[in-house]
Amino acid sequence: MRISERRITLGWLVSAALVAALAGCSSRTGTAPAGSAQPGSAPPVASTSGSSTSGPHGSAPAGGTGAGARPPGGPVPAGFLARDFTFVSPDQGWLLGTAPCSSAPCTSIVRTTDGGRSWVGIPAPRADLEFNGQNGCDADQACVRGLRFADTRTGYAYGSTGLYLTRDGGATWSRQPGQADAVEVGDGTALRVGHGTEGCPPGCGYQVSTAPVGGTQWQTVSLPGTLTGNAVQLLRVGHRAFLAVYRNTAGGAEDAHSTLVTSADDGGHWTLHSDPCGSQGGQEADTTQLAAGPDGSLTVLCRVRQTGVGFVATSTDGGASFGPAHRFPDGPVQAVGAASATVLLVSSGGNAYRSTDSGVSWTQVARAPFPSEGEVQPGVFGFQNAGTGRWVPGGAQVLTTTDGGRTWTTATFGGS
Image 1 (tube, one colour):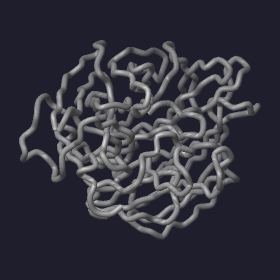
Image 2 (image 1 turned 135 degrees about the vertical axis):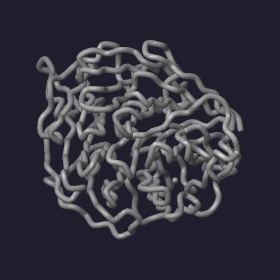
Image 3 (image 1 turned 90 degrees about the horizontal axis):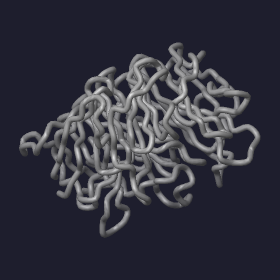
């Protein structure tokens, strides 16, 4: 695989982004592991499963790498586009995506063991990549859209019509009963959000279940009321878990507020909250995406329904209360990330912006080519710790920061 790379300093425009994935059709052996939320689709969320936060890691120095630095696996195929990513340490990570292939499904996975300096393809489940959220696949079609690893051996690939488990680092995958709209792992437990409503969205009824990491016996957890919506987003940091249930803000319903439920004990018990975005200037404002910081903070990305104006607000008490709303000044926001309660990142139109004061002010720090029609939509931010994070804008690039988003390194996936 050819990787080109450059380092961008604060204030420079850079090709910002991605935590890409995919290992081409030729690397798919064994058995069957972005943008703003669209109506009926869940916001893509990167994960550093196995650590205490949701986000990625690592940097990618210039030039190629020696064969000794490469993890076991096959080549990364040409034409790769990223969808989702998961890291268990600053050096160990996996990326989920797709590339042109001669025989569908073309879903693939790539892995790094050196912080993103080199990537190889590993087997993926024999399932289609689900681009358009919960309504992106037929009920009888096996699809995945997310990837979560708990450690170097145990991982999950999931989607609205499928759930797959590996216990050997992705060498083989076994399909599990049912499906999952979201999966997050940490502290020895796996949380799974699924729906049992046929023909949805709209109007999906969601349930939460938990199992030991790598286990196949899921126990349903009691929730504070009925959770109904079009899409979900699940995050974990430490023992905390945050679940947002989204509605269709583009529809004609009078109230499209999201529902937020939080847990402080690895998903054992949950507390119900109203949409933290509330209203702005007497107009409805809705949560469109969450970002959990490594410090346990929770930031919500909000949009005023009538005007499209975006703003952020942050909680430092597990979602019980949120600080003041701070407006983003430059157009619609596709993704939000959090290195901490004060250091926030957003993407807008292919640009990455950084705030060090919880959103009061913003500075452009990176740039990535905006995906063309038909490509994976932008964007995913994820931070493994206060310094190390990645941005997946949706394309053939990976952007990594090791200084909390101030500077970024870009790795580009070329031909193999």
